[in-house]
Length: 172
Image 1 (cartoon, helix red, strand yellow):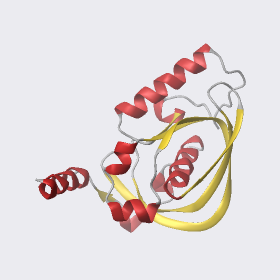
Image 2: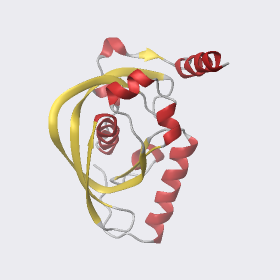
Image 3: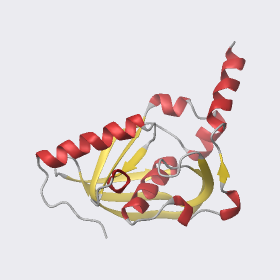
Image 4: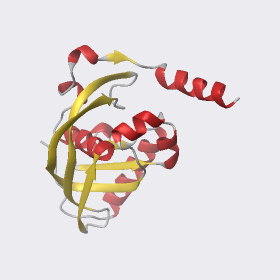
């Protein structure tokens, strides 16, 4: 369905830079090429310290949320290492202002090429595994709504704003 990249050159580097720019502008932790109109087997993940701090501490602990410097995955192949399923809410830049519970494997491994065409192997568990699996789904034309528990699908536009206001009131 999606095109594997055979050569890593200037055009690919420019596209990866654009993918990163859109990731940052959209305030998300992962973005796949199909989300910006390219049918390439490419995605990027970045979880900043600030993003981690914005998550409620109990959720941070339960989901094993930790920072991840920017990483690109070109022509990724994923293997499930620990098939124990973790259920938690997911959102997506392709379906703004909604979330739903989705079951994802606890631990995964991805073999891919980096932005320079060098092969690497990356292991992740918890939240990072969830993000990577979510982005791999985009490469297959799937959204989290294809995997969600339907009765948990909710409008959540105000959740983040309300949590931020709650934090401000606590610190004032």
